[in-house]
Structures are given as structure tokens and as C-alpha cells.
Length: 244
Image (cartoon, rainbow, N blue to C red):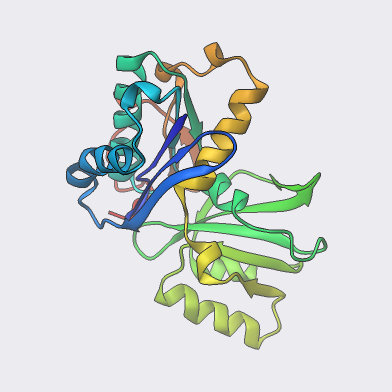
């Protein structure tokens, strides 16, 4: 059994996955109360799924990019559980988890996944469809919504978090014939069930000893660059992407 945890933005999502089916999942807007809600929510999920903690054989966690505080809370909880129960821990980026949830509607279309950043900005990554999966094309970037839509030069779907400014810029882009389509709301919701599926697949392809808890590092963005860092050295700098 794998427990997946995602607190990387104002969204909070947790799930239980056994490799064949999603046994339980909870996803909701937690605002800035992740530290208060996460532990009781995990206990409630295990209780409702009638799954004792000792049945958990692995964990998956969203490592960002996203909110500095949100990412830190989820990663800290996952590391604590993994260390206490000697379990492998798989880190999955928020943008990869989003991509895993998207179907291939037209192979000629690319995919852009997004999470919100501070000061009205957005973090985005691009993907292409290859061998029945979305494959990341480049490192994620932090930018303004207008810059994101101006950078699109080939047909693409947009999925993930989008705010009012994002909707305005999306409509403006469509009005000037930018080849972008917005995925339905259900696909845009970042869910721990898909994070769990990605983490499980990675565990099947790599020996568990390669997924030690102390090797999992959050990803933060500074000045448009992805940076992996551990909890002890990460600073809550204004330059970091944050949706707090």
C-alpha cells in the first residue's frame, strides 16, 4: 500500500493506492492550514479505508514547485512517516503529477501544466506525448500569465491551477488565435491519486533502497530556475515562488 501526500499549494490532497486500484482519496482547498489539517486527515483516510498504518509499504510526496511553506509541510510529514516506519519515499513534482492526470486527446497537441506562484505569477512546464505518457520537455519556469501565453507557438492544452488573471489572459490569447485549449476543471484539479500512481510506477522500476527519505529534496523556483534544496537550508526568501 502506498500513501501519497500533496500540500504543495493551497490545495491539500492525500490518497491510498495498492498498485491496482485507488482505495481512498481526499482533495480540498485547505488555504494556509495544512499544518493543522494534514495529520488528522491522514488518520481519517486510513480509518475510512480500514487500513492500519503498518499496512503502508511506501510513501509518495509532492516536492514542488509551489508554496514554500506548503511544500515543506508535506515533505516533512512524509519524511517523518518514512523514517519512523522505515519506508521508501518517492518525490514527485507537482507538474508531473498534473501531467499524469491528462489524457492524450490529440497527439499533435502539447501540454502545459501550471501551479500558482506568488505576486500573481504562474509556474509552468511543457510536455509532449510519447509512448503513452506525457514527457517533460524542459525545466519549469516562473513567469507572468501574459508571458506564458505569448510563448505558445504550437497547439497545446493548458491544465492545472489558473486564477482570474490567468482566465483573462487565456481569453485574450484565444481572441488573437493562440492555439491553446483549456482542459475541463476535473482534469485541472491536482489529485494525490495520480501522484500515488506515478510514485508506485517508479518504485516498480527501481530498487526501494534508492528511495531513502533523507534523499528527497523539495524543489523551489528562484528567478525562473528550479532549485532542489533540503529543509534545513531552504530560506523563505521573497524571490522564491510562493502561493502562501
